[in-house]
Length: 101
Image (cartoon, rainbow, N blue to C red; front, side, top):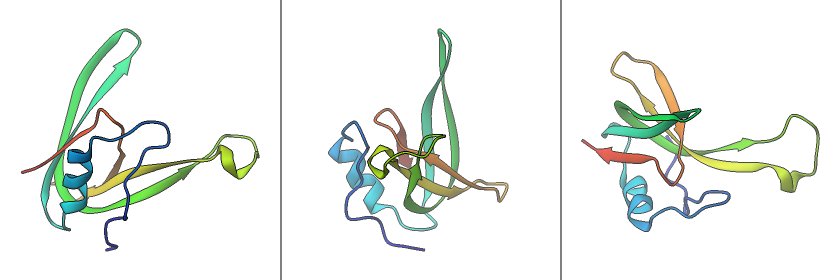
């Protein structure tokens, strides 16, 4: 497993420093709960999942056409293992809540 990145940043928003500190403090095997708001049309609800923390990484995204490198977005992701053994990851935004259990 790799160490936490020196900085955890979003491409267009700022993360709460307390959230960054929590994310950087997580160690592989820590039990976590990730909660995000799901929105479909006018409806929205919270969805949560638990698991064992694996690592923080960055996911490079792009657009569907070839463009200049500056158009790529790089988003932080939390990688974890669900209780059923499934490897999973979720991208972090300013509304994502990660808590240590």
